[in-house]
Image (cartoon, rainbow, N blue to C red; front, side, top):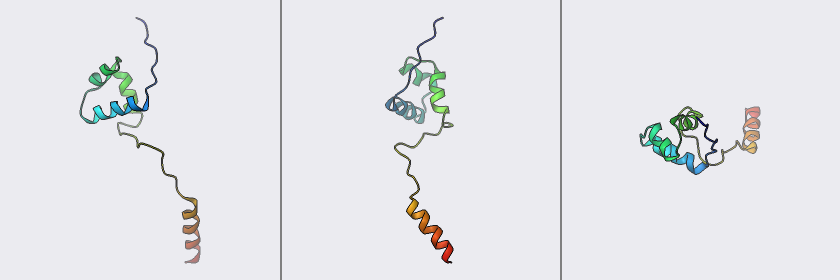
Length: 76
């Protein structure tokens, strides 16, 4: 039995997996779309504990606000 070549899913493909998972489709049904076994889809969904990750860049804490907050705490 030959091993299938590894596939690196695109952001769009992962979004399709998450959309279908949230609609209640099984791992087997989702995996059939990509001609893969359910374990390949389970790996993607399990990376974040079954919770869809946030899209886009993560907001970082503004250092100007941090300095303002720390200065305000010194005054009071």
